[in-house]
Length: 381
Image (cartoon, rainbow, N blue to C red; front, side, top):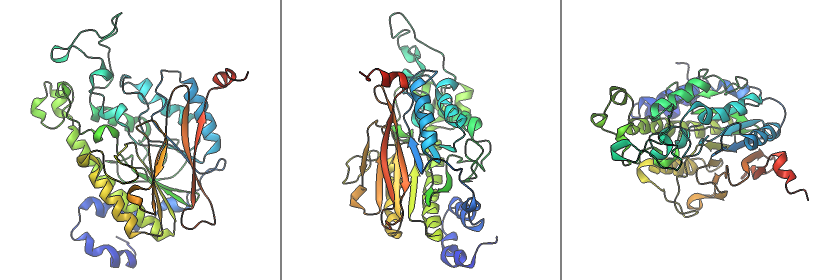
């Protein structure tokens, strides 16, 4: 396979016992020896900017457009960590994909990882507005605006659509400008690239308990587990939420370990792992909000941070709409950051910059808020 002798010595024994996914991931990273390592990052801006849970408004997204314009000038890489629309917005192209197109149009390299609102929650009554299901009301509001038509009702179909819109070329970011390493066509949200000596490795980990919430009336349009409960052939043919979870979770565990392995081999001191879900329950003491959904992630992060004490790991996500940073379980080389996203009247992003001279914690993090010029003029007096 062309793997280095060092790789064979260190990892060949594990290849006999671990799943083929882990082996394929390590082969992609180690045997190719990181084709992205020499990829030039476009000039302009500094560091990596992460946002999520945005814009949460209807087109044409004026506040979001202004913030993205500013963010594109301040950053070398932009990352949207999911929830491109609110939980009550319909699952359609305008709300799901429109905000990402605004990011891509700036020309600044852009990555994206899946949120729950634009995929795993498309079955929800408040999203699709279908209150007639299983005896529900035909109308929620006065005047009657429900039920309303959605483009997608099933998580797998929505996920596939986002991949088709932005990830047909798995060798680059969404703009097509920045070469990246992608884990596989099966898990195209899991990418890897180095920016300013920071290894950025998004994973697919949406909120709402990773799609594992078996909710009332869910089987009407989108199966949780048993496809026998589906009422239509189209429903029976799709992947269930449980199938989707296992596919993403298996990829994620291999990708996190691969990111740690890559950073160690290249002498990188900072690894940034973006995703969507608020996975934690008791900062800074640790603990997961939903063990079945996020327990593997929690255990994997504790393992890789312990195995790599000279590398700082920064997990960054959205989901709960406020800003918080803490070190889970007081682990010295793990910082978890939740970006705020859309709040009343403004939207925000987190900016990660590499700073020379601090070997232990080499990345500075700040929250940046933006309003539209019109909104700022309201306060000029």
